[in-house]
Image (cartoon, rainbow, N blue to C red; front, side, top):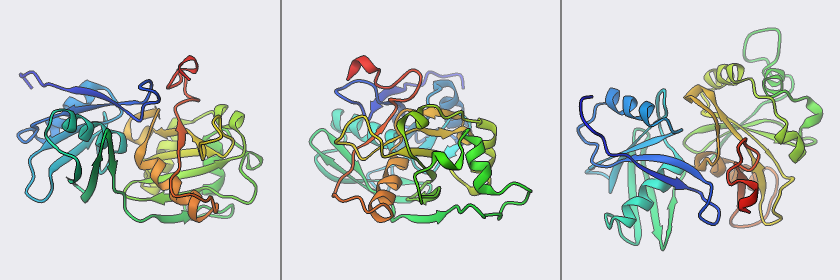
Length: 273
């Protein structure tokens, strides 16, 4: 590009100010082309980089890029961006908004927190006899094989479900934490299925949690977007919370979801609490 680009690296969804998921944030990005934004995101090398531009229809326009393509929304990069804007005095307490390629979303600044709106959930259950994708192996079987799982590894009477609140993820109900840790991800096949179903990625989860205050423990694989595994994914946690509330009858107005603890290396690391 022939010019220096200032990129802020902000960790979102931290635990006791440790771990979390780093996002790149580029301010005053109005003059960058789509190709240049992709080039910058690839050079930054994080799962997502947010580009902040002026906007007539919202407080700011945000464009999100992974290392290999643009993505409609990104939870941790949204939180990172508005937390940075708050720190720089560019947004104040109360409601503001972001405009993306997929429409406008509300943002609430509440003290040190940045809270983001997601769309109402849409569900698609993947059944054991689902053969919508051509081939001799069912989609259900391919999903299990792509994670090195068998049907016995799933929560009894529960099925993989695509949930979409702006971005689509495949939530896969795993019966135990050890099984979730031992997943053998076939990134090529996960990418193929994600392309066929128009997913961001796979979001296997278990109700067998490390902290009793948490609702679920998860992992997230998104090779279609150049992300092997991600340590915190707001646009996947939101859909999972909807699924737990509506399909698993889990009570409560808020849910805390673990992610990153089963990665290698873990985020946060085990000695970080």
